[in-house]
Image (tube, rainbow, N blue to C red; front, side, top):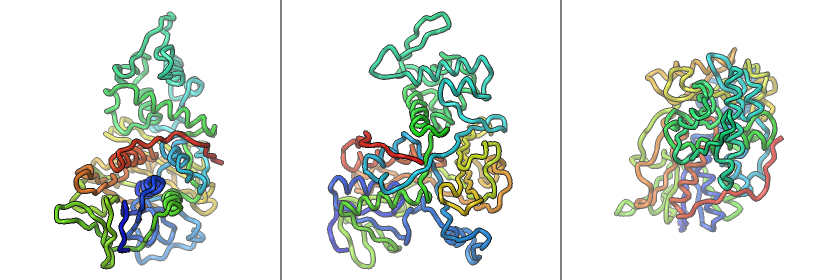
Length: 450
């Protein structure tokens, strides 16, 4: 281990493995270490035996659930947007060739205690039971505007009113709130567009320029069309644990070195407080900089919140979602008088993550009270009968500096969302800070989902 590297990376979470792959492809010499004997870090996927060891230590896993090897529980469950940043990163790096994906069956939103399929385009708007007849027409006009919008074509930068008069919309001047008002959309419609389509986690986007919101809704619609399965999401067979291993394999192909089960690995600093490598078992691997998740950098992070997650085993699909074997339900904050949204994520043996006849369901949200176990009850209520339930609360830690001075580049903790957009945004921002370059994720070829 007494060698010199461009980077030593601590932790094998998705963010760290993605960065390892990108930097290795760039020609950097990378050493990747983890205190655990398995990949994934905080976002690991655990089998049934590992799950029981973590949440019910000393109690053997029940035999009624079949082989423990047939299960894969994501500690940070998330789906992938079909045309989103993570899929683009997979294609850009070629890691998609190592993995198999299956489309998610359904995307739903909760309104007044009921679940509704999320309308994502003008045709969906006309068929949706989420809205009344006149609101459907207004929503259809909004969706047509979003679908047709093209930066390079000024003719698409506006819409006609009922009298045929064209109105130009400057998306850098208009806020999202202003744009919704231009189309006369009701608060309930704004709610599902902002949270179930654009995937914002709170209401702050409403008073920011509308360009970002329009782009996010357009991304949802494009992802929906990409696989034509009724949902914009895909998910890897055998669970999310396959993702970090795929990027780790990419790094290894380009010369990256991996060392697992290094519980004593600590960052080494010089007398000025600059990271110069990592020490483990009496040896120090020198490096120009060190990358890692917050758990490896005590004193260099701060807590900005917490996430509560419930992991559940079911014997049936999530009710009121058309018997979908995999589904996401978003509960916008206003539906529960909260400040942040709640998310329900479910999958089944069709994704090879559990025994046949069983289903995995997860509920997550940002902690807002002193009783996080009670906060997620509205999401649990959507699941019907629950066979097993495991609840855990995680801190959301973020770095206190950008790494420019101390050469410690630290990823942010994972938020409550059940999609990867914010995860990859953090990676891309870190990549730019580390290399000074902006990563171009333009696609070289297509990824397929069954």
